[in-house]
Length: 263
Image 1 (cartoon, rainbow, N blue to C red):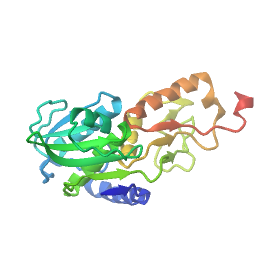
Image 2 (image 1 turned 180 degrees about the horizontal axis):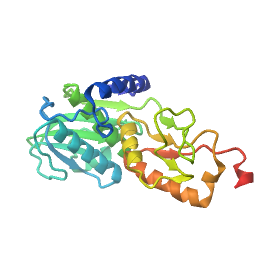
Image 3 (image 1 turned 120 degrees about the vertical axis):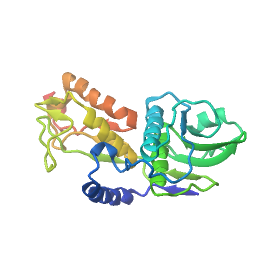
């Protein structure tokens, strides 16, 4: 079964999250994933094995490990090579290399993913495979949503491809830490004319964006501050990019039209 990302679901999910957060008093780092032992009723191999070593695939494996641990009383082990019941995390190329007899789809679009229950070599295998590293991450979040909803994946497999290649959010943050048309506090990116020292909230925000398939973030006000393009601030902005990179979220900037003249 093949489907496409429904971007309207992001807005519906946002509304639901707002209500749920108020009702259940979840902390921000939990996002939409309940942290409740014994909640998971579906059968799933608890051992998680990442086939790749990239930051994105490690984020994916750790996210699934954290999700399973948060929803059950079981322990899982990233990197376990025992095939007696595993959840495999990797790109389609990596999965095909390790499991050559597995019919991995070859028609996934960039950022697309494939989920598959199967028996391989006499052992239960749950495969989360992406067309690329970001697709792996999106597949993990899709799997976790299914588990939270109590759904069981079809044995024929389930794949999704994005309807749009560019799925970005646009922030209106100013270098002084204020936010034009912002009503929920100060910027998580800037303060006092510079990039904040503590960028942990940025990493958590990137995780939230990735969980609903957002792959980019424009961090500054559209009425851009030209000084953000000087050499010192470019180095500072690179720290924001570093914080978001493990979640597949790219950084963009609004650029003032007069920047070539003023910088």
